[in-house]
Length: 154
Image (cartoon, rainbow, N blue to C red):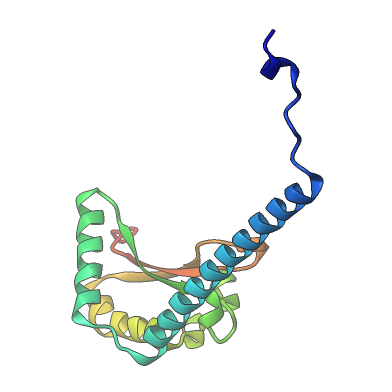
């Protein structure tokens, strides 16, 4: 045996391990704060867009592509828009329970899209369904608008 094999390696001190653990915790906290700040900025930008801007040609073109793709795939509906249920005046309760007048709870772009549907798509035979599409923590999350073109039942 050589001397290096018999000489025990010095252990890292408990204080050094505690410092390292604290440094890792601080780095993780900083990373989490940056992620939260980024998400808050994204949410703020979404809210500005949702309440301040109008449905533009770019969004109409996206909806048209979604519908065309779904029809080409043999489907009779396409989700054309989604937004947080918290942006409904009743937090999505009317949509979740399919209550009459749920459309009166819409605000911002969601209301504008619904009005656009009523003016343009409905007269051409399309339908619109609104549904809660996820339930984070058991509570209504996002609302999905589904444009439908199912054949009439005879």
